[in-house]
Length: 215
Ligand code: AMP
Image (cartoon, rainbow, N blue to C red; front, side, top):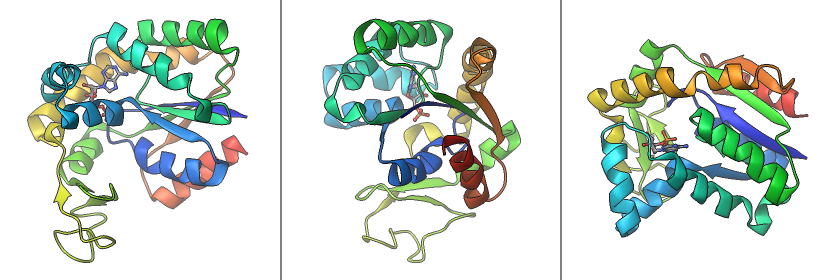
C-alpha cells in the first residue's frame, strides 16, 4: 500500500513524477492545485475566491483546502493508495491530515518524498512551462518543446501557460514555499518515512530513484 506525500517547491517535478507513479503503482494523484484550477475554470463562487489567492501566489486558507482534501480522500478510488501532490503546504494542514487519516479513514502515510531543486532552476523551469489545454500533456519551451511548435504534438490542442507561472508570481510562490512549506521536512523528519531526492537532472533518472523507494 502506498499513501504518499510529495513535498518540494513549485516546479520541482511533482506533477511529472506523479504521472509515472500512478501509471506503475495503480494509485490516484490528488493535486490540490489541479482541483483549485478546475474550480476556477468552472467559474464557481468558490473558484473565484480561490483565484484571488492563486493569482497573487498566496496560499488558499487552510480550512478551505483541508475540507477539500478530506472530501477527496473519502472517495472509493483512494482505497488502493494515493499521492498527495501540493498538500500539506503548512504545519496546520499537516496536523489536520494526520488526524483525518487516523480518525476518519483508519489509514496512514507510508512514504514522504521531498524533491529538492534550487530557486534559480525553478524560475527557468516555470517560466517555460506549458500545458496542453485539451489533454493536459506537459511541455517546456526549452527542455521539452512540442514537436509541432505551439500546439500539442499528441492531440493538436493549444498550449497554454498557467496564470501563476509569470515571473513575478513565481517569486512570490517561492517565498511562500520557503516561509511556510519547507519546514514540513522538519515536521516529518523523525517519522522514518521521509526521503530527500535531488530533483535536478534527467526526469527518468529521478523516477528510477523514486521507484526504488516505493518498491
Ligand atoms: P500548485 O499547482 O500545487 O503549484 O498550486 C497552485 C496554487 O494553488 C498555489 O500557489 C496556491 O495558491 C493554491 N494551493 C494549492 N495547494 C494548496 C494548499 N495545500 N494550500 C493552500 N493553497 C494551495
